[in-house]
Length: 400
Ligand SMILES: [Zn+2]
Image 1 (spheres, rainbow, N blue to C red):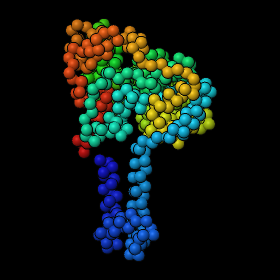
Image 2 (cartoon, rainbow, N blue to C red):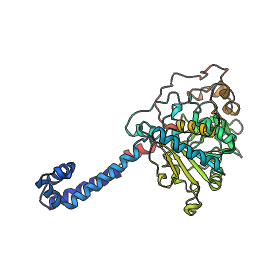
Image 3 (tube, rainbow, N blue to C red):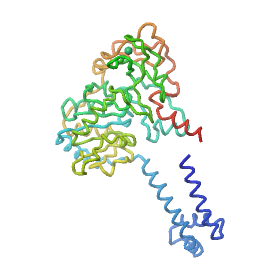
Image 4 (tube, helix red, strand yellow):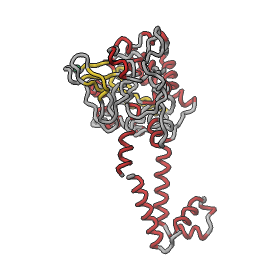
């Protein structure tokens, strides 16, 4: 609405200018004249433009702003040769880094059927357009090739730490050790009791955020030890996360402080850029970690990056692993059998069986679908981590 207001103001200004010069339809004349290449304009059109120089300037500025915005939203792909040579450069940086830290966003999970947020088909984009987003297959999502590569690079000690803004829990499920991970916005499979000290954690085999939304974190289940209400760990848009785990801000800040190379994968960085402790901006430019960005769209950190790669994360990572000569582990039935979530999970008590209608993840030797109440797989997303930020935007719109 702020944007609309600004637009209306601009329009009024232009109209006023035109009117002041005694021409109500001047703007239209100017617009049509501007659309033509200079050589094709008639004498009259050229005269109109000359006469209304201020309006012309205003319109041109507006056009430039629109073009910039449009360009920032476009998905760009480097061609095969360019991609390859860029990845070669990245591989050198990975090998030479003393302390490589990886920042990840929704773009690394798109191959796992989780849509990203701000891409052309992202959750945020779709909700903004008033379309409903389908939550089917969400819990069926499995670690992608990128998750498995990151896990492998950590095992090989090439990656020291991972900071993720994803709530899908896929880093953990890929086998990445928890001490090497910060999930800054929470984990959809973890609910906690904050009445217990230290905070007691319950890992579940289903999305615990079914009933939660902005400022409403109660999951409806209770702590088995003290009886306190359990809450999700999700940091919704507009909130500040204070939970120690799985957010692990201390680990993230420490990693950023130690980093000499930061690799950003599949994040628009629009939210991450606001977290000052991740970017060492208080240091002189040559003392900051070198920034490598893999993302299809523009990011606010592009100008500060040593290298920007426009490619899908899975494509870039598989080229990178090839360049590094490291095999890519698959998330197959063997990996699934050792998926840490199964050993970490606390089973529901018999009386809690009906407390969730979300699909349950099953280890490979068990039947795929153990959920008590299924058949809601295609329910539209309302709250929970998946639609985060949406509630807030909607409220704002109603208020104005
Ligand atoms: Zn408790």
